[in-house]
Length: 135
Image (cartoon, rainbow, N blue to C red):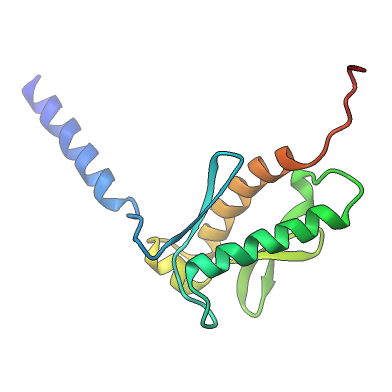
């Protein structure tokens, strides 16, 4: 029994050591009380916090230009300048750079897939919806 607990504790400690640790300079992007993604790299002279502000601007643009609710299938990954980027209705939201991926212990492709999944779960909840209940 003691060996099982020792193995379990070792596994938990090893798993925790592999998880990326948030750094003070990271830019966390949260929407509707939910963590969506973390930007870690400075790109084109923009800090992670400035990149999250730009992401907010781009999301506002997407939501304001459409008469229809944003659906998960409207949000896709496209290669832009050699990097996987999350795009909504043809408008760039965010690019997963090699440096972001390195700082988060993954590849740019995997990071963009994680961001896509998280964004697809969150952003459509922000779009206006028709009230079908008549209230």
